Length: 222
Image 1 (cartoon, rainbow, N blue to C red):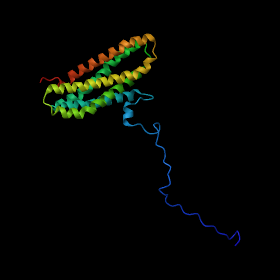
Image 2: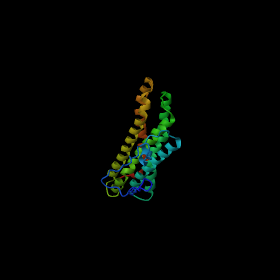
Image 3: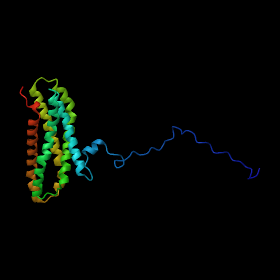
């Protein structure tokens, strides 16, 4: 047998991999690679916010608050559902339409390093947080308003949830603006140390007044 006629055995065909042999598992996608979740899109800070995107988030927060209003309206049904669906987001939209523009004028007079987009971004994120909270407690409120007989209990529960939602929105609004205002001139920071708390008080009073007028199911006589 010479080299030309010599034959060699064929390599073995690949078979199933033994379970004892460790397999290489691809690493999970990083935060930069995976698509953002719905919560991240709603509550996250946009790298390059747009007017349309922030307005959409503001309206979505108001729509979530309407779910809470519908839950309040279940106590009477009928037109109370409509009043609730319109009244609960009215407080949020009232602050966004009246209190925030007034605060923007104060910021401009104080020469604060903020743009209109920064204010809209902070407002939309605050509204979304308040709306998510109200929508989250809506099922529990719906169960209580149809089972509790005392009107005063329903009033305290309803206004308590609205006040807590306003506090959450106010905290989110301040937290969003604080990094930009930290680098403001000393005189500007002194003015804002008074103007910002005054704005929060004004926004709270405005929202409560709107809710008082727009949610008659919470102000009815016992």
